[in-house]
Length: 517
Image 1: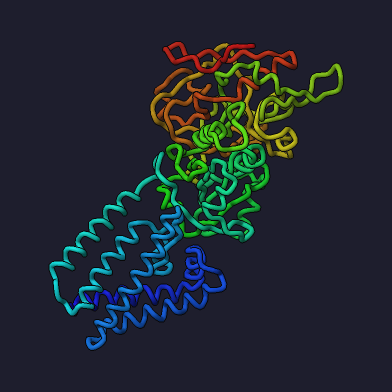
Image 2: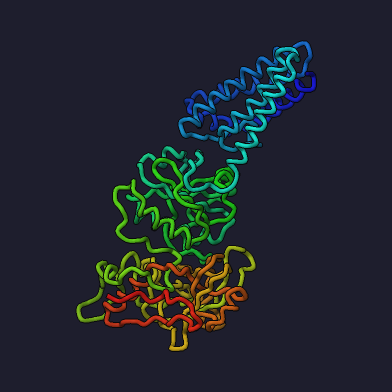
């Protein structure tokens, strides 16, 4: 009994000291549990005092039974508070041990408290009925381990999404309830301060928020210590691989990556789609291409004001056309030009066809970046003429040695083929990234593209030698590519129809040339 009392004393002593060292986190946890903010400071102080008192009483033999009763009361109170929140779909961070343990609460927290309560009750009754309390403790321990194992790993379709409470760039706190208040699907995009590919994706996330804000709610969980000015820099055209544009809204800070870990995110950028009832709808998407596909799924999910009329155009897209009819894309084509002249820009679907200088990376071979594992550097061709991308022509306008990588078939010849790589390999997504003209060769541009690893991707490089799929990092794109149908229709609208390269003759499926209108 003495040993059990000392173990409990150590547990409560550690909890009290850790809470006292993390007072701001303790106050935030109290508010997250649903109590008034004005009560956070006095309740936090009272809780620390009570836990210290229990620890001291448990460590002193004449007082240990009283300390055990105090521990039992605290544990029952904690368990009731946790059960009330979890039953209402809320899982605030526990901070039971201050900053040492900031994981969200769940039924596993109740089971853990049950284990400690069994030990406290054993001490409170003076060490009687050891087999009874040993059985209760073992049962609670098994339940705790089982529930923790059930919560481990990535979130899965059909399970309830873990709750959280995180501040955004303005200091406003967002919870799962607040994000779902509009009764729309929620796309949680997981980024990280140390992730170059995430920085490249954030401007596209901002465009999705602007374009589809009435259909889906999109929020970003940014892991890692937040650097000063990082939010503003997220959308800046600084040549780090991201397209120019505004930073996304609802950019929430997750400095200790607690929420990122709770969702089982092991690589960024990633995204999770959650419906209005807080149920996870799809497996975690990893990389820009899969995230774009998940946005399309979100637009087709009931619960928003409208159902999407067409699939979203992806940030990663544009080496091959969608299977959708080019006629559908042509409905949205709008040219801007003086009468009788070819337009300098054409709006087609959600993208723009622009007549200007650009970088073309459709067959570029790339090398890993020496300073960022999520970025590859591709040596692309500098071209003048029409190309298609998802940013406006003004945003893509060349400035000095700065260019933007977009898509066209301008550099293809009769010898160019579309090669499909079916095995899992690393490739580069260069669409809409910022490039710099090579100072040693003005006909070439160096583009910092997103590194992607997946199966089934297309490239115009490789000369149909599929052995290079795993030995060379090609600039490529996924085979499901919407967007190129709009490019083809826009080119036809200005009287310059284009022909896409044939698939490689070795049996590669022809997935790059949709039927014309």
